[in-house]
Length: 555
Image (cartoon, rainbow, N blue to C red):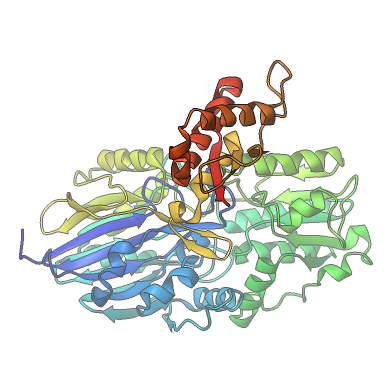
């Protein structure tokens, strides 16, 4: 196919994982493709990356081809789809396209990031179209757990591909437009070369309940509560915020809001009219003087984030807000895989305080924003895609989605991995190349490769600690005084009760004594001998290999 026009798809993140969504669509001959980026998301670091704030995809390929990047299109304003823009746009600087709600949250996020400044954005309405190089992109209204989610119908001379974004079928989403099934059907009749589609709930049968069903159950639960009610949910779920506010009003309660991200989402939502006709929300200062039976506390922290409001309240560390026996906490969310331990710790603290806990196991207080199998087949019916690539999911989700598509009759189906260059047209789906992929991390004020930021060494430190040995030598190679050792994160004594620091120093002295005096003039040789001796000493008496460094000072 060399030299011929092709339409290709490649994910730099988001395939085989939840989060960090970033896709590229390419059109043209292999050596001269134009590129369109879809989404620019983050994921959050786990224990394997200690100290890291966020993780973003490695963008080195597209950075090397910026003259061919015609635009960046964002499907919706969840962190795993737009959260990396503030970090990566200064390097990419391509035209940005998104809806008004996403643009509002991006502006607020950029203003709180040091040194980012204003990011220029072209706002596109749901149903609108833009042109970026050879790509015409239509923003099709979908339903999801956030305002203004869009699927993208990407048209090229080689055919049309639909990138679903995150979605579900919900005729009553609570806020904003419902999914535009009529337009999806029209696009299907035009012809869809391939569907790149959300797989998060592909393992679940049936269809998802509506957001309106959640609103009804939330109202029932809040109405029956005797004392304070706290509801924790994602700040971006404006329909849920609206449902909570309506339920509070019906129960003659005031809504007290906590959390910077919650305030940010509410501010943008009010500007766009999504929270019209609701009473004003109160700040946390009002919590102390409201009677318990008049309070609905709306706050962040549903995923156990240690710096979020709920974690501090559960620990009794918040200066203005406390929960006590008989109060209720509603988790209007589902725990993201990987956050179970953090959420469990908060649940235990609340239980110890005899706070009543309500989750989606007790009542319909949350519903996913992603399609189950019944909704996936409804989308197949509408779009009638010639091919399908499962996206947005771990391996088990991608496989379940692929198997469902095959059962439905979509034979041209392919499971891709990050970095796979998949030819969408002409012909059947096929992996024809691969691009470099990986991650970059934000570590404090530094952004870069995990190796460059020292994160991998930091992880080793957490397992086996560190040793620093100091040796002083003179110009003749004589060791001055006794070497010194500092041990970090190691036991004080071995199994026999002997001091580990003494053991290390003894072994270093012996190693240095074994070096001929004339060779001890070589500071590098002395340092390496001391390092090896210290490390071996700990390995022999403790069984672990700490990070070990030796410093040699010549006097």
